[in-house]
Structures are given as structure tokens and as C-alpha cells.
Image (cartoon, rainbow, N blue to C red; front, side, top):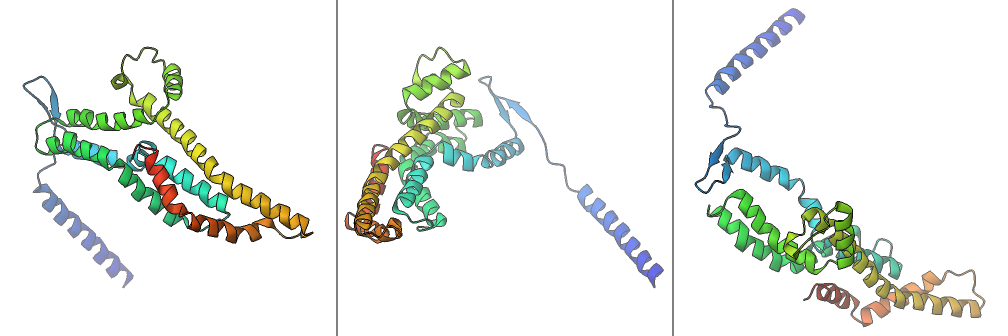
Length: 252
């Protein structure tokens, strides 16, 4: 029985191999690379290469969302706020990420609308080449990042990168603009977080002083001050103030 089963398995493998070879032999090969010369001297690549480039770019989409949008500032401020209130896991990480993501969509909507109108739609209508569409899509993002980047950070990364002469903001390369933008976002986020931390810190100090005056030194002030922090945050409509401040920090 063992020899028969082995023989049957071998015949099955051979038959499947022959069938698959005959089937795939009838399928024409996919053109890997085709480059066409346009009338204006530019070059256009085949659809296969364009799809490959798009799929490769999708792997950088999370990094682009974090490093080239308002995502960094918002999530840092919300994390500092949660720490200042003494709530370790409330709101949960999923809720914080969700709030950050949708507030980022809200803030970045004008930029993405310009990218869609100036780059994506002309590319879909085959009015511009892929490389030209990428250049057109960079302009709104570059304008947004430049408006939120400090000149000190921009000069520092330009000096480190060897870009000593930059005549206009449009000439700032992305390799300089992106790290300068992220550095500025980190500074602004910590500044906002510091301002949010002060009221809760004062409340902790008041509660700690009262407990020490009452002789309750063994009782943790954080346990007593936590309900008052939550009550204070709700009474001043804290979430609306925080979200409004974050949106207003980008000019909204």
C-alpha cells in the first residue's frame, strides 16, 4: 500500500505540473518595463512600473502620515494630557489614536483637497505625467510644512545637510524640510503639553499640602486629587478646549 500511495502521489504531482505548464504557457507574459518618449522630451513608464511604484509608495504611507502631517503634535499633546490627569489607560490607546487620526483628517483636509485638485485629478485624466503629478502633489504639502516649521530648525538641518544657499522657500529640499518640520512639531507639542500640565500640577500640590496639614502623609495625593481633576476638566469643557486649541494652532 505504501508503494502504491507513493506512486499515486508521484503521478498526481507530475500531472499537475504538466497541466500548470500548459496553462501558464498560453498566458502572455506581463511586460516588465517599457519606457516611452514623449514629444516634449519627457519619459513615461509602462503601467506595470507605475503600479509597482504606487504599491512601493504605500509602504511609506504610515511614515508620511506621522511625519508630514499634524499627527505628531496631536498625539503627543493627548498623551501628555492623559499623563497629567493621572489616567494611565483612560482614554485607551485605541481611542487616543482614533481621535488623533480623525483630527488629523480634519486639519489636513484643505491640503489634501489641493493635492487632489492639482495633482491627482490631472493625472487620472492623463493630462500630466506621473513625475509631474508627484511634483504638483509636493507643493501643497511643502507649503503646509513650511508654515509650521521654525526658521531655526530649518537653518540647522540645511547647514548640516550642506545646503548653504536656499534662495526661496520653494527650493527647500524635502530631506531638509521633513526633519525640520518634525522637530518644530515636537517643540510645539511639548509647549502645549506644558501649559496643560500646570493646572493639574497645582491641584496635586494643593491636595498634597492639605493632606500633610491633616497628618495624612501615608495617603497618596494622586488618589484624592484624581476625582477633582476629572471634575475640573469636565466643568471647563476640557476636550472642546484641547481639540479647539490643537486645531487653532494650525490656523483654524
